[in-house]
Amino acid sequence: MRSNLKMRGVFLAYDHGLEHGPTDFNEKNVSPQYILDIAKAAEVDALIMLKGDARAFYRRELGIPLILKLNGKTDLYKGEPFSTQNTSVQEAVKLGAAAVGYTIYFGSRYEKYMIREFGKIEEEAHSIGLPVVLWSYPRGQSIKNDESPDIVAYAARAAFELGADIVKLKYPSDDSNLNWIVKSAVATRVFLAGGKKLDEGNLEERLTKAAEAGFSGMAVGRNIWQSDSPVDRIRKIKEIFK
Image (tube, rainbow, N blue to C red; front, side, top):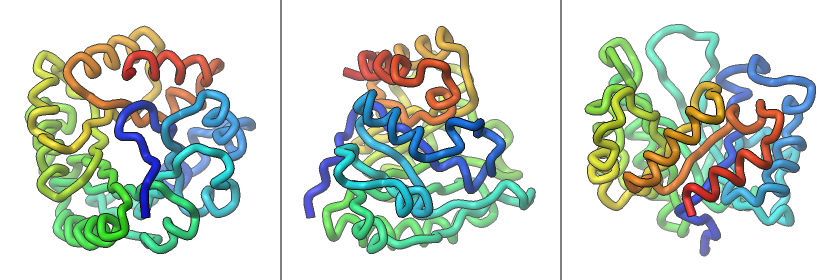
């Protein structure tokens, strides 16, 4: 099969409901339909969802490529992070997905299980032409600062070594050498994670620096659909990553 996923631009993420519960939502954005309306109006380059949202609301006629997230965890367990697969590549195909996504918490005592599981998913997805997006998040007792430049660059390299087409990374605490992160990822496209809510000025400054360093785009959620002007914010981000 041939994927219509662009390897550059803005991906609108709505995979928060499992890990965060309804904490991030209000009366509007608690409904996936609100997110779909934003995605269509702003012409985002992809929409990230879990299978529950996708089954109930996503339709191919929307014209926005779907990235189906294949693993997840709740925030109720407070031990070492461990996110396991909860749906399949085959289900992604049924739902019309253009790519699949997966999170690995590098540095967790359980990383070996996530690496092994991701390896199987990556090979299966690529065998049928689906790109693979890796949420590369070093986290756990052995990780003292998951935003240090060295750790973020390690996360980028690990994604390349495991065969990811796109890696989603945190913004480093020191952004003086962002291009080293991009170089570390080699052929894997680097997307910036949206993360916690930022004011528009801080977000734009980060995005501009990332784009100049060679980042390919941004996968953003709360900074968009918690905003009073989500469509305008997406359009500004798209301009930066043209």
